[in-house]
Length: 103
Length: 364
Image (cartoon, rainbow over all chains, first blue to last red; front, side, top):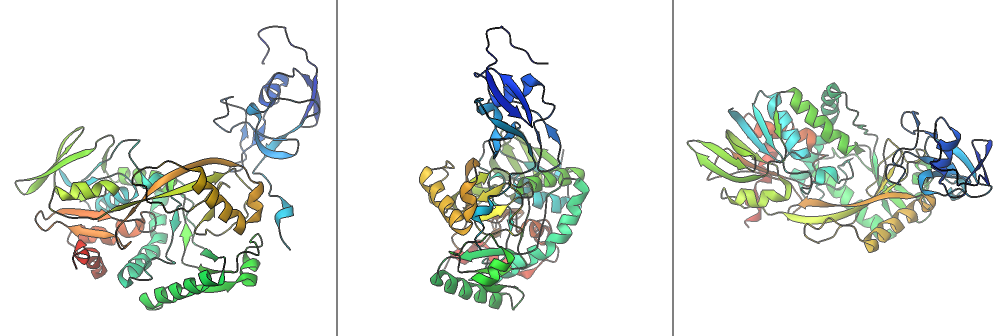
């Protein structure tokens, strides 16, 4: 659905999104990569479980939250892809760090 | 168009009062300020809170008791709007981090119980008792006061529900209409607003900080103090905190609100790094798990206070039919404003406790 306006891009950065491996240009954000490779929904909301996609692409709306390299609730539109990055869909709210539960 | 009552101010106090008046068959007009007017109704913690309120004032303690007891019924009425306000009343905590705080809190709670003739229901919990209820609490919290009577609500949804509820009862709402002057005219009052002139037999001032200036026009002296509180909002988190506390509250949507600062800076509602740092540190001290959490927003809001913290309900002596309604706790008291307060405004039989909140108490 989405394509670049020009052909001047090297698809040289390997990332994984929801378990699938993709080669994408190094200059784009995670949200752009998700759109580019055709991810159908990048998260499910904590309140109703509705499926969502990136919206504003400029860091304001918080619709594009994803789990990036193990850290949840990251704005994927504000994060550039990096080689070896592991991206997962954000399902519901972020889990709390169990390490912080004192016994 | 002729109105019975003009309510000036479309925040929680104004809308709950307008709703209550309309329920009693009044034809009501609400004149509201602008989007950027200072609005405590859009910058608050959403607590329906009795613990602490009125520990030094029996009337206030009793008034808060009536309000929280009316809340379940009020919540049921608002369900007709189909707006989910997430009303919950399963208790609330106030944490103490040292022995001195604990002692002070215990004595305050005991005074409050005394002031309500034992109606106020509370427990002082030590750390171990607290930890059983909230495993996430840190060792730094040595204990807490807990009252089953406390609760919380989504304050923005409440405001929205009140708009809809009063609309459903035929209340006319006019936004962007700052009230400028109020003048008596042939037994009625003419309110000149930025959008026009309106007439009614009664006028109720629910304009927050602006009540001071508006009431002066009618010969009333309503002392009001502004106090800033700053709040941090976290990302949405898996539910971990079932109960609201005075400075940390997890909303039904998962975000955590962190407060609460008390600053005397006039009507400046900005945020400052120093204060945000302080409130974040206190929250992390209580809930270490919050240290790894991302913050999404921060805002400042202006509390509307009176010199003794109690509400002011005053009918003008020189201009009967004009009422000033000023309070800090628009959420807690919403159910009382929609009920008993309207009885007083309309001259029906009313709860005598209301008379304690006249401005005369400041003239000693």
